[in-house]
Image (cartoon, rainbow, N blue to C red; front, side, top):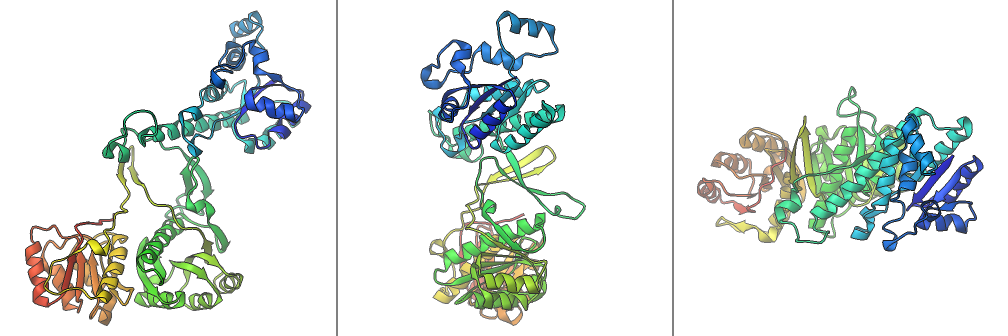
Length: 513
């Protein structure tokens, strides 16, 4: 039996090669793989010995030869193929071990592998007779099966071939993405093509099977872009039940909102409580305990079964306060003290305790329905308060600007139509997902109650009529931020001036569906 080895990732290579030799395999290796085997004194032949042709063009051409690919591609069930092998003295290759250059980690023309994908695809095509190994994680299982049975089963070769084509597809997808970003030689792409290229090639790899999907009768899993390193890969679960689809969806929303709030208020602590991807409460405070209590007080009923995001270290004191409150499905923080984990584990056994790094920026949104997809770049603009225009006679105070910024941040991350009321750095009223902006305002003021008096409010889109604004001012709101842009902006501004309130416009809408 003959095995061809040509790998970039040499993790476990020597041990695997030694195992193959012990099972009677003749090894053929190329380039750096051959050098690594030689250094470890593992018997092998160099590809150049098999092809009787030296590597050339700086290593670009070494395995692209009939003596190699004839041995890989020959169908052992076809007599003519076997005759061709005999005529040209080509030894069949039974196992191809190849993983590709790490293009995604350092994109360049020189890391566009040619020979590697060709070998991988050839072996995978001929998987009825050839095994193809594309990851060190497969070494142990392959050796074990070869040792036990002397060969790989049809099912194993099929599974390995499927993984090989996925490996090659992910590699090509990374190269296409690099071209789309202007990494190849040529003109930089237009802004449109950079955000929305002609084709999108996503290679996703499953990294986590979830408890279930949105509902218990649905299966769910977390995938990542192949070769990527998302922040979720670095999340640690300290306690609690297995994660479900909605646990991850809501925890991601909560964690991103907490970081956005903290970025606007250096020196203050941020806590957000999320339910179904919308904030039931979000707050800034001098301490995390103060911020949590304020966020909870905004809507304690909706907080039950939600996600608590803590923008800092969750210590024992905060753990005691959280444990005394409504049941949280997930608590996510930058870190947990050991005492906090023990306190929460004892009081809230099912609650998932997660710690993780800051989230990476969002870049692209893809939503699918059937065979159709809607694609857009991420809604990451969020104009700073310093760029807002005051359009009323009344001018904002520094305290109002803080509350307007909190309301605006939370509102931009709330399902549309959305109105958010904030007071003293706390989102005290959230009206989410309403078909009417007036109704959204009514929901927000009802939740805020008396806390709406003297508070600030944000609207994710313009007020088409003055009635939405009047609903807020009737409840006592004294400052409003909204995108503007309605044909009736003049009427809305007049209504704000009659009420004697502050109104600012951002010229930036944040619908969220």
